[in-house]
Amino acid sequence: MKSISTGILYFLALGVSGYAAFVYGFLPLGSSVAPEMQKSFLAHPYGIYIHAFASIVALAIGPFQFSTRLRENRPGLHRWLGRGYLAIGVVVGGLAGLYMSQYASGGTVARLGFAVLAVLWIYTGLRAYLAIRRGSVKEHQKWMIRNYSLTFAAVTLRLYLPISMVGGIDFAIAYPIIAWLCWVPNLIFAEWRCTLANRHMSHFSVNRH
Ligand code: HEM
Image (cartoon, protein in one colour):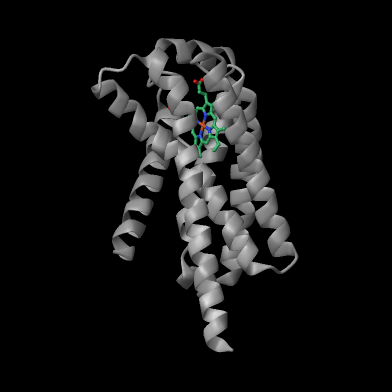
């Protein structure tokens, strides 16, 4: 069961990363999005290119960082990938995402959804970094679970959008909802995983004493 969900995680994260890298690397800017969005991208090409390429780094690196095997066998690689994930993906991608949020389609509700997501993305990344600098591995893991659940908004957004289109929901109605729906449930799921990890840890320490 665990290997199936891990496989799905890699598939979705690398699939969306590859798709975005192809579309933004090889196709004219905005050719894959709604005309309203394309207009805003063409008006802020640096913002969207920096956001897309930096954030891809986080989405693509993330799943490997959760691999216990990689962390135990190649701790140096885990550290370097982690630095790239945080510095390029979360900080650069998040700041550019925050910048682009003011021009997002879907009006104030959507803009606020993306802006809060960007701030929380950077905040959870910073907490994860500070935790590991203090040597607190468990805290680092929990903040990273929260942080990657937010990175994963890039995947869930691209699942909900086509679903809303198939469901015949108008883009103007669907997009502001999806700007929140793409990350709030992810974060709730991450909190639940952190609680489970906590219980497991206390159970473990009870059994050890
Ligand atoms: C987690 C924090 C993130 C925030 C706050 C954020 C924010 C945004 C915003 C505001 C836009 C413009 C949308 C519009 O104009 O309507 C956008 C577009 C985009 N973002 Fe993000 N984003 C995040 C994560 C990611 C990640 C991890 C990726 C990695 C693939 C990504 C890739 C893209 C791409 C490729 C676009 C262009 C639209 C498209 O082709 O679908 N974003 N993002």
